[in-house]
Image 1: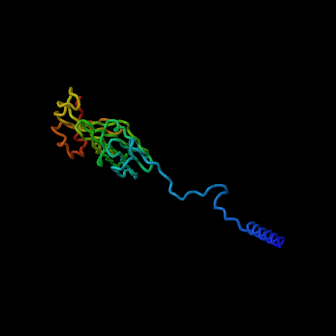
Image 2: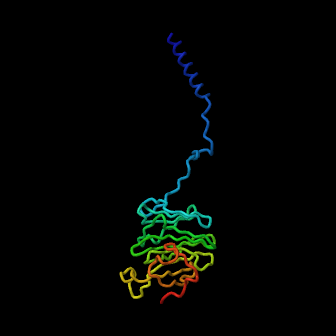
Image 3: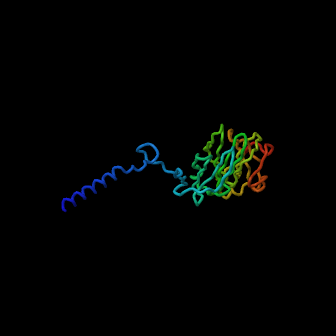
Length: 228
């Protein structure tokens, strides 16, 4: 009886081993051997920071066929400009203490597309210019400052390219921002984006007297030599 029981155990074990060996292997995952399958998740795009905070969009325009987006932190004190899908420019005017708002971005299409980022700063406004030449956008690297609080874009010289209009107090011998200077008449100086200053308007008692103010509109006929 004992021998019979032992033989039954041996036979049963042999059957189990045979079943395991003959069972089909689990199908291998598709793809190259040894390479884990690719994730089907969307690629992650790193965020753009404005200072120590994440950026939020506060203004956008389309110029030269490309989207131009102004982004800033919640306080509007640190901003960047994104042109196209992935080109980001930190703003020089951040260091001047500007406050960026929803109307800070202004772009004008033309033979040469131009964008201006402007914001309030102590004693006036500051602006930074971006120009596209040959399809390549560049920061001109020269901030503009208006102690009368107005910087605008308009094709004053009628060459198909927007010019920068800076309204300032005409106060020779007085410090910009001083009470004496703030009480002085104002004029608008016009800057060609390639050649620099091309002339000034006559003096006005207040900025609001300029045509179209605060989005000042001038023509070449309004210009004359700037005061020395």
